[in-house]
Amino acid sequence: MDPSLMSQMLRQMGGEGQSPAADMEALFQGNPKAAMLATLLQQRNQGGGQDSAEDFQAKLNRSRRTGRILRQQLEEAAGAISYIAEVFGSCELCWGRERSCPQCAGAGGPGSRTADRNELLAWVLPALHSVGLDVVPLQKRTTGRINGPKEDFDER
View 1 (spheres, rainbow, N blue to C red):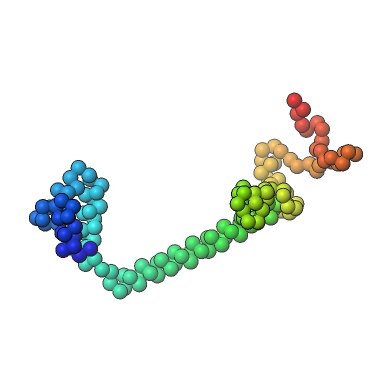
View 2: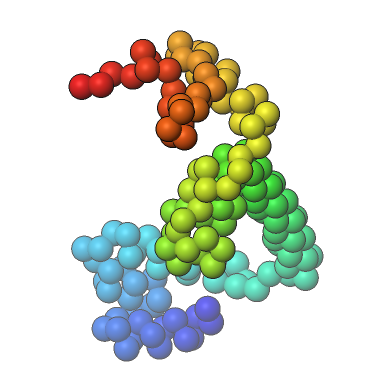
């Protein structure tokens, strides 16, 4: 910020017109965070206030690198989300959690589509085994209903 512009702003904000530093100190007395911010701005502006062409180019290059990294991470996250949705047979946009979803209208939770059985078992079995659980196939009863083994369920 131009020092004359800063002085003018400080006068309008109630400064005495002595010097920008003295005006800032008087204006922000009692508000240490604002005073610190104003001091940092003033110090930055005393350093020329303008980046050299080399500094600007270096910042631009860093920003572009950061943008490429973030784009790559976003693509990787989207791939992981699609994979999990496929494995669990759910909507890849919202996993059935959003009524406003254009793909499933909130009805695309796990199992709403055919899950990838082999991938699901490969992914889930190690975690189940680590807590002493296992997976058994469902058995069809003569009524056409699908149930698991009767002894595995508490019928309270």
